[in-house]
Length: 465
Image (cartoon, rainbow, N blue to C red; front, side, top):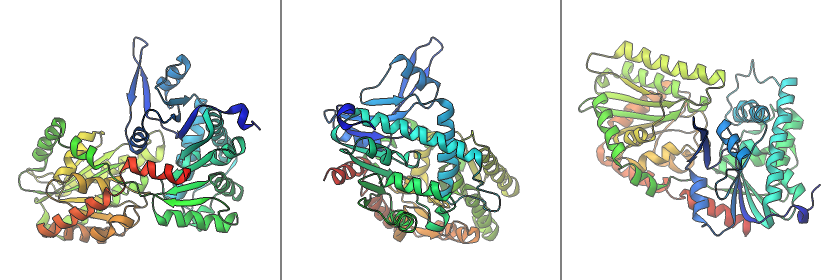
């Protein structure tokens, strides 16, 4: 075991996550181009200022990133780890996205899966190696008594590993996903379930997006490892970045996308908008089926409403995601074939990621459909009310983390109930303008209560306090 003295670095605030704030591309001439990312963590770290001694430890995700590490190219305040590509693939796709994500989002078709066989154990060993690489890097880089905040299900073992290497550190972990209820979590092999929990309990403090997910974690600890021990639990409901969204949504490219969407929708029609990755938990197919049910049950809406559905491909290196993306496209095509007329396309489906177009749709939406099977938070539910021009009715799944804060002013649905969701869409479309505007105002206030920078700083204060 490394001693704190022999590994002490210079950084006082450290963040660890699979994906970092920058990615690199190799150009044909061999030069590297850096592309900066956004999001809550970027906002949070920028809020603490350049003199705070902060470092972001992340993984090299592609050939460009690995080449940057090999050449010694680095952004200020970022350390990128060149973990073996096969190890990373096993840890990221094999375990994090195909096991832990499925457990916490309760996605398994249990008659057939999961199967925790020898291949799973091989991939789990890679997940351990991947987590250890982060723990060792953090141990090397952290100053005496530094604060370290580890992010998400990719790195559940890091807090315990890091605690063994550097007992002087203040260690936090934040979960951006739901947490599975005890009975579902226990699908994991007993030793693996215990390893995950004890890994996270290496932290001084664990953060969750909602009380529901925090309570589920606590219940798992009570049932499997005898409780939380000295680890504290906190809830930080990540909010939308209102200033950024309002500024960005009024730039010229968004106005161009609004004009194009208006042309596709047609004059005088209402819009039901959804913006999602084609992630299995987002429930896009049932959303389309509910829209089809609306057109079937309430024919007066035909030619008067358009479903603008943005389903941006996600994790296409996994077959189950490719199949799901194809099913989304098939159902949309079927609805258009069955109900469409020469002057009306019932579903406008876009599958190419375009943030400006998403913001344009937010501004135009009469109804936003956010119906996940299960979601840690769902920032779309928070972003639409902030950006909406005329007020927008939020049709929201009770299984989204955002329900805890937004449920009172949304039209709430059971995500599995297609008929119920169709009725909710009908009620949302028929809602009086005044009520819609009042609800939107309250939704926007709740959605922005804890903006990203404050969300990060609040965790840091709690960890340091």
